[in-house]
Image 1: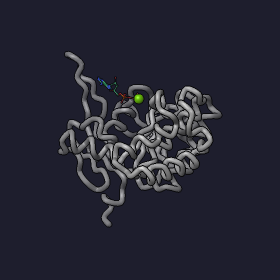
Image 2: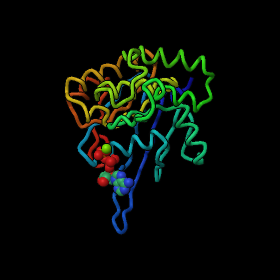
Image 3: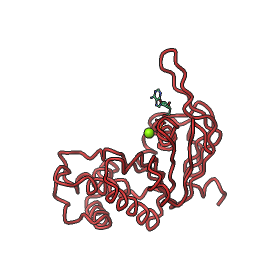
Image 4: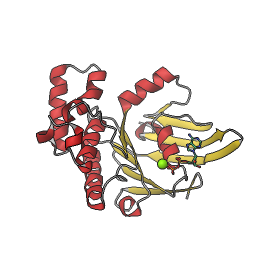
Length: 227
Ligand SMILES: Nc1ncnc2c1ncn2[C@@H]1O[C@H](COP(=O)(O)OP(=O)(O)O)[C@@H](O)[C@H]1O
Ligand SMILES: [Mg+2]
């Protein structure tokens, strides 16, 4: 296997500029980045340094102005919106600061949803949802609605939902910012354990240096450049 295929995602010479009316905002100014299978990578830096922009590019939510994004060994810049949506659905997991669970669905239904959308047969879905809820310690809460859970429990549901399709890359933008520090530690530990066990890399944007210091690798961003 060549090096590009071995890496989960790579950014090569990536530039991104936002335009707001007359304002030109250079968000990323030449980013080179390689993420290895199963690693827990922290992107740190002050607000506005470009963390979310990098995650949005890795997550195929946005496109670079120049440079290449290589996902699973394939250059993905030129893909159309349909192909990008499919790849996002099939190859990536997402964890958000605000959990983004569906409030009218139970915990199990939230975790099942990506499998349902992908057309996985019902019996396999049931066993994978149960195994994933077991892995995050919430099998006993399968029938609860998210509003019956604590913040830490909700984020564990979101982690289960992100991993249930066995992606090689999970994108997590400030995943612990809504949690108290003790709960944040537990959620980070869960991401580390499951990422290593299931071979999923986590790229985590965080401005919390206490958390980033416990990741496998830390990259610091400043004004759209890696230090
Ligand atoms: N949709 C957008 N439109 C205009 N400017 C944006 C947009 N998203 C981000 N930016 C700007 O790009 C820069 C990087 O933002 P971002 O990647 O969100 O940083 P971080 O996540 O580190 O706080 C900031 O100057 C921000 O204001
Ligand atoms: Mg951000």
